[in-house]
Image 1 (cartoon, rainbow, N blue to C red):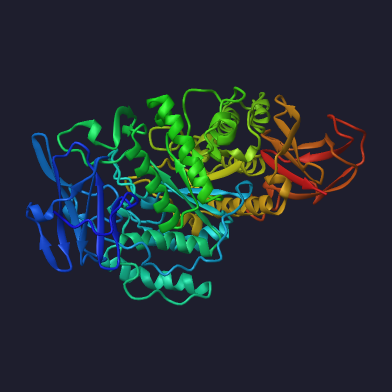
Image 2: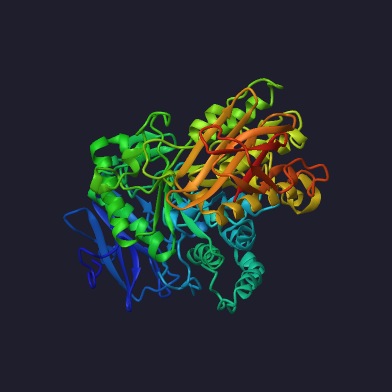
Length: 625
């Protein structure tokens, strides 16, 4: 039997390198025997002998110490169960050997082999976050049928910084596309091969050099573990937090097919088995996974996919686990964002439907920070779609107005809002905004102008706005993760002026949101709505401070002149944004207010003054004092 040197109840799951070797710990409660196989310090150990046997503790964990084990060694387990015996990979492996699937060898990796450069990085305040959701495999590639890798995505950190987003939310970097994932190891298609590492290292070094850092040491990017860290590192030095998406379930160590010997329950979500959160060992596994992301990868948060499945599988156990989990993370990493996708059939129109999820544990809630919220998204898309076929008739602007202030929450930033996301605009589901706005011509004035309105509403409304990759430059194709329907980067880079113009509009709106505190604050009042005229006006401000901002939205297909609206105060109001200016930028026929309006009229719409506006067709205006 393998030595138990250095092993106690606090020994981490998986393989952990120490000074003289490595400890190994895996959960397999129903296994009859678990053997450690592999190549350690150049010596091969593949026979199932007494010397390779791990020791089992009373809780179903099998442990052992391998002397001489070092970074880069390969290992896997041979598990003997009731009537079955087979090789199994380590579910906590930091890296897998792509040549040895399905029961892959894990590659032993230390936790601190990457030379970090992000010591000065501070996670943005939640209310200031602007999220960019991207799929690693398709974000950076320009070749159909080929996945982009983590290093190519890392090289786009300067692009994201120019756009102005401050949170990157990659879709799961560990997703095998089969409903089964290894939560600690990046998927093979997203890893740079040796040739790609050689090609991309100068680019990574060039990005580091722009921030005053020297080149990486030789071999620093050879491991999958370090490629994942490089993505985070390059984002951090550009002021961008990284919030990882954790998804699905894992391939448990089960031998003999008994679910009680697994990390999963027999309750299925849409992609496979749900986590068996009532098991202490499973809870420990998930805590270890969060610690891995926070400590080893320097992640700034996690987005939990389909958390409603976990909470409904065995409700009491799921809810207890959730608030214990969030409480533990909050005590150790106070600024670590915990973002829940929580679809349970409850309508977000109903007050308090989201409150238990984001309420503090001390108040009886689950302690999550924010929740994916679809009300504003659906109302904006309803209005854009209705505009595409109703001619000059009324539009549901009142629906958009009602969705601006989510109910049942202490702060609007508890909601992550969007108009596109990976679930929504996947092939076979709904259209991207340009196609929704004009299905007959995705580059028509109607499509361009309505898409600017949708983007403007997202970035001036309360909540944490989230963009989906390509949305910023008017990508109109539905998304698929298989290397088809790629982002048309060439269009943004000059082949399609509508795309580069839309990117500039997006970047300026993001800059506006970051400049004016009221656009990131809690207060909003939709004080004027006219469905027949297709006009909406809302007021943003900071309670007790002011900083007033007025947003005027039109989905009318003609310019309105001398349109009078209430204003929070008399005097000159500067027009700091006009979406019409971005059509064929610089638009020689721009309609607007010449940079300002004068609020010299009587009280109106519940506000103490009023002003006459020129409101361009299909536009969004922003004014401030």
